[in-house]
Length: 222
Image 1 (cartoon, rainbow, N blue to C red):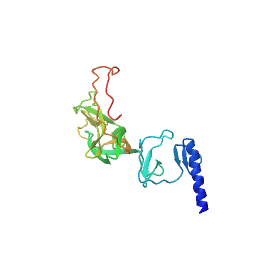
Image 2 (tube, one colour; image 1 turned 180 degrees about the vertical axis):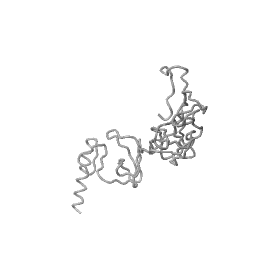
Image 3 (cartoon, one colour; image 1 turned 30 degrees about the vertical axis):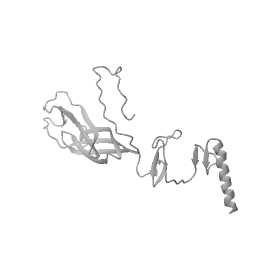
Image 4 (cartoon, rainbow, N blue to C red; image 1 turned 60 degrees about the vertical axis):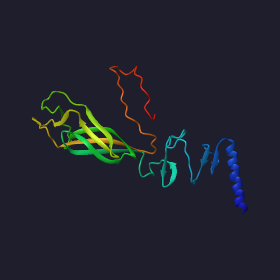
């Protein structure tokens, strides 16, 4: 009993001494932060001013795992904050992809198309565009339309060229319909920890200028 009392007194004195320096340490003689706990803590209520924000000193993110609040460790977590995904779509027609459902939950992840490529199913890059689907080589092409968008709770992919069809360069008189193209999409999937609010799309008319003198409002949420 006396031993337990001595240990309690020593721990209390250590806390008091550290508190005088503006930092409190539990099971540590050299606290690095205002409260430095070297061990497992338990609480039935926890309030964080800026949850999910990087810390001032360590630049770490907070994440939950196994009902405990801890620093995010990619070697221990079953899923990452940032995930890199290659999506290969084969058997694509000349019209490209209009709406492909990735089945990735839009409430849990943010999907961004990092890069993409159009090629033949045999791996060659002998792919050209027929502007307006007119069958002539007019040295024109539509704008790339490769985006990820949300629909019915999941992320969808659109990968095509506006006003253009994919054609094979190896064909002397290419037909207007093909089904042997491959589209490789390189996606970044960001796991949502905390969503502050939805960010609305922004449209700004520069009025024919270079934009240097244009004044716009700050986007909502930033």
